[in-house]
Amino acid sequence: KQRMDAYLKELKVKVNQLVSRHSQLNDVELRQEPFEKTATMKIKRFLINNDKQSGTNQKPDTKLS
Image (cartoon, rainbow, N blue to C red; front, side):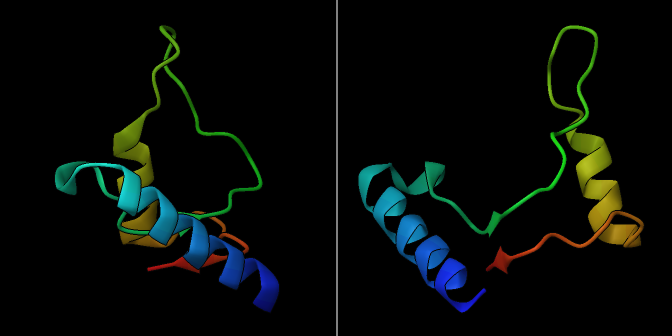
């Protein structure tokens, strides 16, 4: 777990160096299951935000803020 945290932190730093300020990553999460999608294959972002606020979703293995 500690190695994974270090890897995710390094990945976040590298990505943020390559992209513009408004495209930078705030955090990185590992998910066990893929995102739920609509019929047109778009990620249902509102469900992700609701899960984070209510705490009903399973906690990810690793979260880096």
